[in-house]
Length: 90
Image (cartoon, helix red, strand yellow):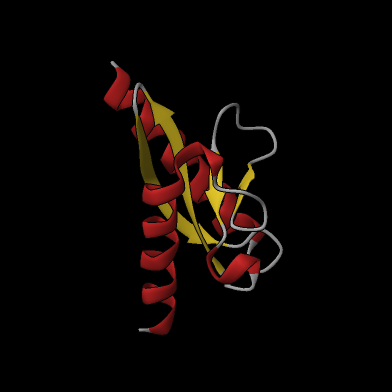
């Protein structure tokens, strides 16, 4: 339950700060144009929430593991986020 709360808190920070949310709470995802990751607990959480700007909104499209903890799971979550964001823009 603690990690769910950490993700919810990170999403709340994103809602308040928007695109101005600074590192270490948010970071660009390498190799995924425009996709960013929320880093709960200022990066100390093993989970990430993947989001992108869609018009005036910031859309969280997937939640997955941190890249170093689970590289395969991270890539899968990034792919899921990109697919969902592509579907929603069609």
